[in-house]
Image (cartoon, rainbow over all chains, first blue to last red; front, side):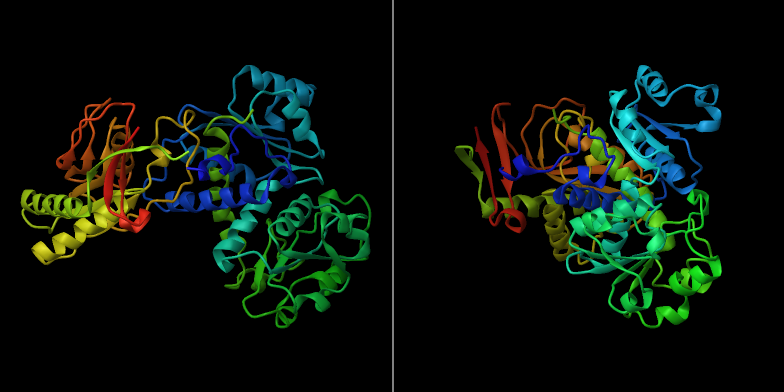
Length: 316
Length: 178
């Protein structure tokens, strides 16, 4: 069968940036995720697929949903999942990231998942370790599994990608989610417009394939997906806008503004949400909001990624 | 390169008769169909189980629920074979204390059935699990035997036994290729 020759494979691969993945590979991940959604709905939510594999969660930043999501994904596949957080690791004693990577490598991990406040740190890890590395968020750079679970959620709700329009609204500058999602959405044929005050728009955002609009109200009536980003006060070292109140007025999603949107336009948010800042509390709980569903998608998509990376012949 | 067809060992009418006989045997052994649940193993066990269900409806006048099992996640050769695209499991009924009949096209080493048994156990505790197979080609590597067999086909390990079904391949036949 010729079809087998061209079948995409992720065996043994790192997933650090969305640009590491082709259109067909993303489709493979999303198709595989569907089966794992079914596994999570079973009474016994465990399958033996990755028995005997060791998954290391190395987290240098606080995270509940991503870390728990990877942990649940690994455990539902019967892998042994070890969580290392910065506070409980030797990094507190001054060990460098490359030395920590070498240490973990000596323990024969099968896959390493890293979250780190510095952009590019997964590449340092990948250079010092033999197993595949998955980026769970690095600084302002990327968060590829978030983009993939967002695509999966969109596919489940709307059925297709090509021809859709999305607005990504908020702190684009500090957001790794924005970067990964712009790359992933445009790769799948979704047209992306970023909406934010000038101070929160990165200089070369058009090069990633996104259009820029300063006025939320001009864009909202035209899009199928309204993707709200969290205002990341912890990453802001100086004032990027005059006040939270003013930000809310121009860039927050409230019911008044949503009335101008298309019927059934999806309201998405990577979480954690700041109710009443970037998104009005009532809006977050509407049926067209996918915020909770995105978390469920996250487990299925991460199960698919672990499965696809750890099965099949590694590609040389 | 397509493999050379060596011999056609079953045509459409022979296959239909074999499936009808299996359906009768399932109904007979289980004394009716009240407790039977059919589960087809992807890929070709799926249309086969649907055909058996149709036959049993004609024979016994009742509808037997049919499920679909994808055993990919339970394989013991994840590193040897490239992963096939997973298509998912659909078992939308309770199997506890019931008689589940697994259906597949070819029985060979028994490893697929071993995986299917494990997968099924994750859905509950059936009273019995029975195995219906269209073609048994021998060469078992595990202690597994079928309860219902369409045809026993002695084969060499160098040969490939291919079941073609109208729903998937456009025509009903069993061929041996080398």
